[in-house]
Image 1 (cartoon, helix red, strand yellow):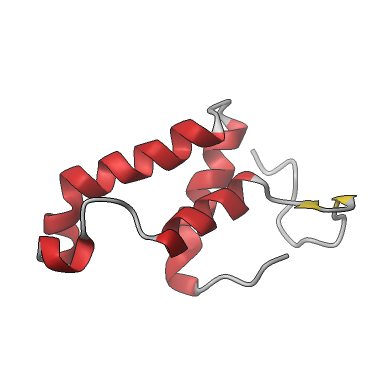
Image 2 (cartoon, rainbow, N blue to C red):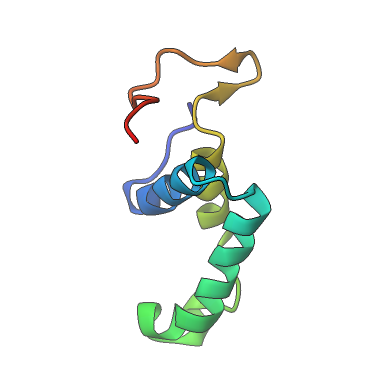
Length: 86
């Protein structure tokens, strides 16, 4: 599993949850960009800091959550987050 920063954990869980709800990875990533464009100033205080699109680190955390448990070798049984928590 790729290490994540604790402040990216919400994005990781967003990716994981949207996969479980049946959304595509494209929907999750574009939705994050739209959210940042609409709410970026109120979340971060200025457009200069937030930009219009979601950051690359946030997008990576969403993708990692979306593909939770996947490795280049298939499923990883040693990850701590249970598969049946939903």
